[in-house]
Amino acid sequence: MKHLKSEEWYPWRRRSDKKYPWERYLNTDFLKSERERINDVAAWTKKFQRGPYHAPLEDVCYYVLPIEIKSRWLTYLEEGHTECKGLSALRNCSVEPLVAFFPSGRAPRDYTPIRINSSKKIALLNSYTKSTFVQNAITIEDWDVLEIDFIYADVRTESNFVSRIIEENTNTEESMAKSIAAPLISAPFVLGGIGGISSASILDERELSHGLNIALQMMLPPEYRSFLPPKSGIKGKKIEILEGISIHLAEKILTGRNYVRSVEGPNFGIMELERSKRAAFRGEYSILGALINSQSRGIELYEELIHKFFESEICIPNLGEQVDADGVLNLIEAIDEDSGLQIASLRQRNPAIRISVQEEENFRRLINADIDVVLTERIRDDGLRDIITEMKVDACVENLKREAQSIARSENRDCADLTALEQARRTFKDRLWMLEDDERFRNIRYNARAERGGIRVSILKNTLRELRIATAEEIYQKVNSNTAARTFFRDFEDLKQLLIWAERNYTVYRDSRMRYGLV
Image (tube, rainbow, N blue to C red; front, side, top):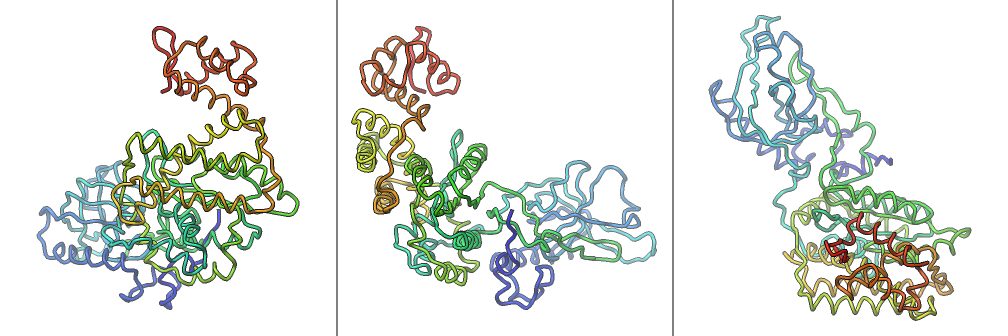
């Protein structure tokens, strides 16, 4: 896993002479979101210091940190009933540090942000020095674990902020800038489905791919990145907050409900592993896939592309024509804290798909026609082309719905309606025409054998869409009446085996009269 450099990971490095986050102390060394955190905890601390012991405290948000505390500070506490942790307003800098005691065995994970709902102020006495000096601490009775990006709440968003930064600094066309930005903005998670947006882009230069991936990861809040912090940040530093009491500050980030994975490689195989991880992730898992084209296997990559183009939400055939090394450097220079703040805030919005059944059907027909244009020159058999087009339409429409949700987010809208879907289709067609215009793609033919399994399932689904509910014999009769479709089934037993598989995988259901329908 790649580590970002310190100046790539920390936006504040550009205006500070400090190297590590725990060295900061001036107000100007901190980011906007951090300053707000510091102010909130500082206000709470003033009340805490003035308040009486054992009195209930107001709620407050803190990061939980590992602590090392000498036993002499624990002499007057009941043994075995509590677990000691450190608290700080920031995970990587000692700000308003505090010693806290949780019920034994129930303390949150280190570096977790929490909201403390119920707590009391207590006094720690140092039995070794027999000093009258008292260290204030708290016992925590009730708390909630917060989302790791809670620090970015309530930021005002600007329409199309992310794509505009990309467009202005890389000189890409507007639709391509929106395509690049979509995985960063993402799409809401659907229970039983997936969240996020995946993209696969072809580039001719490995260095350009590296640079673009770094730039896009830098645009994200640190909590969403797949690239790791600097090694020095992960190692962290122990800070003594009082003689015999130390907390461990570090850039250790727990994975939350938002994650953006950057991968690169020579073919679409790099996307397959990420796709399975995305399917298992309960949240928004976006993928930034960079496919490095080469002289030795350029044709092979484009042969893959004709099959994979409609599987990722976004596929950019030749991104190197849109973005160059200078554009990437310009983008890196332009990135500051605001891009991460905007992305985190945009992801708080969960626009629902809001279109009628008729609108979706009309939209589906348009996408069918768009795909057919590309396949016409590559599949001569009209019947086979119709089957494959229908198979691609299913995935493509669902992908464009998620892209429409990303567009709705970027424009501060609460729903993805037909207007957002039409915008998504326009950017999709721009990518489609980019593919058509690429001379390396012109002589590529579609290999139906490579997708035989998917084609069989698609034939079954389309047959049941038409029949609605039918016995295995009726389904086979319908399939057998189509010259192109019947070539994918050896006999009736072959179809029955597919029905058994489809029922086990919740693609179809079977009723008490042995009739099948689509789930």
